[in-house]
Length: 245
Image 1 (cartoon, one colour):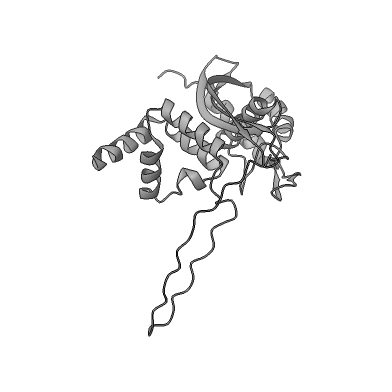
Image 2 (tube, helix red, strand yellow):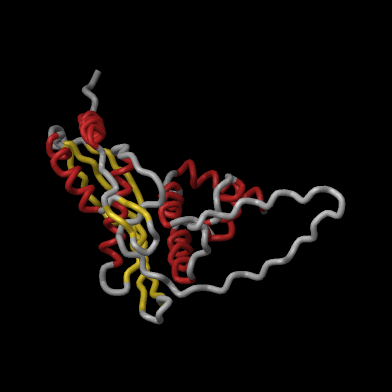
């Protein structure tokens, strides 16, 4: 029997070592009021552990899309989505395992791509090495505010005359706000590169018990785009589309 690739033993070693202390949420997003782990926290924790386990984490950008939008104050806002492969390479025998993820970021200057790459690295590391996380962690401590959109009109519903009124449905979480136009354009462009249309993807998400992309968080849309790189997930969506025709 041939010897197993050493990259997997190296990955397990990183999981074991990073699990001993983890990475605390020491930073705060002042605009949206949550704690998160910054990219520097991830680098500082992982760098010595990767070296100790003879493992390299090497990025390869597969695609990048950029959409220009407007902030709520009328300034320019750049929205970038990157799809990145990370090769986990063991230096002992050259064996490797590749993982894929997406990164999204907005910036009003020239840092949107840098932030998107940082987000891709951070979430790839968290998932590959099982670093505990919770909530909607963003890549940066500052979130630019895109131009707001008018909420769609609502229609009042008549209450039953005899039966006791039904309990009001719970309010949606605060992050379930509809996306801005530039965010929608960037997501639809990334989806189109995979051969899918937004409406088909949105209907499929609902059928799978997931929120529609328009109300997903950045992290959820990143996971969705990454999942569609998986042939099995892509085939499920194609089968769903075929069933509608």
